[in-house]
Image (cartoon, rainbow over all chains, first blue to last red; front, side, top):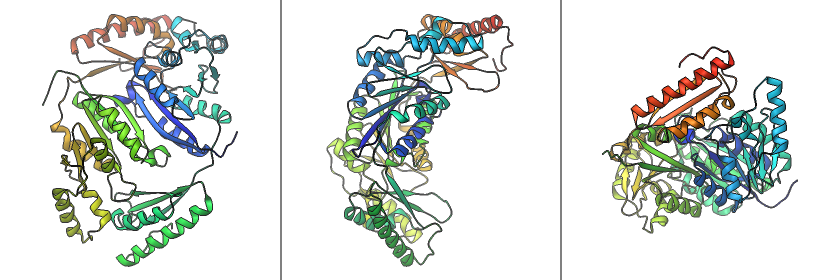
Length: 256
Length: 256
């Protein structure tokens, strides 16, 4: 599916281990890239602890605001895996054992000689009315209910689930970007860049200082879904940067 | 300063570059470790775009809820650096050029032969009533207003600013952790771990599956500020894991 309207998303990362610093999150970056590649605008990320009320509040705030919500974490078999419970509560629906999920899990367990127990069956509990997100790595499915996509926290499984849902998502007009490198500091290009931003309101211009990396000191990143306008604005930014280099008496960096 | 009460924190990461996937955030993990080391409980993280209203809303939501708020990003000299504006708006105060900040910046610029211009002077705009956060790396200060600490997005500077504010923060009772490694899956230990969690409500037990890492398959992490209770609970978890290994006929992993 494609659309020209703006498609937006919010990401909810669930897990004490991220907030304690024990685990370094990599799902934010992966989801951000996934969204950008599909022309979906990731507008907000929240990280909350393994507390039902925190998850319910965040899910309800985000799902009212964006086209899609992605969650990651808390769908395993242990007592601290409470995401399914929280999502069912947020939607006001029951959380029964799902026959399809149970069958998928039992098939995998049988193959591997793993016993069925109550903890493992927690992973087959799916909110009423949800569709399963089946993935190639783990037999434990995620699920979609309304605009909320509930996925695993283990990065490998999370990425497989994102791939699984990609064909079902509406995609927006892809945002293109051009980077112009400057061998002068942000403070030098800041004024003229601000003026160019006013001239090109539909091209979002960002400035990112680099610390001690070769002689490039600032990267100016232009983003727009209008390719012609983007290249016109990038030409103006390049001229501005060239003038700043000339004034400072320095050679421009490679790659412009 | 120290206190036995629970000291909490929220982190607000500001920047389109994180949400687009262009830049991988490292400040969340660094802030999480910083908080844990000080006995401050990081309860929530939000990532928002470079939009004034988004920043104002998130800052106001977080500062009402937690002891401390940390923000990172958006305090440089370019038009997309709007954090100071947003914080001034959130607190309903003016944003004048701060004489101390200006003097610090001008001293650095003079040393390096950098001209003073309007873009650079943006970095001296500090909300009325705020204290500066001076750091060892950059001459551009962060600032503290109320319980909100506004810091740079560049990780090296962010870390220097965290070090600078550390002595000013109230710290809680440090949370200690013990990790017990199991050579069986989460589904095997999930049931008994849940029962132990009920027996030890003041020891938070988490279970983290490992994918294909040697023969350790699950890490059980116990966290508590009560050291004696933590070790008592850890002993019970070790016994439970040993029983699971015995039942499965496998040798326990190293490190328990």
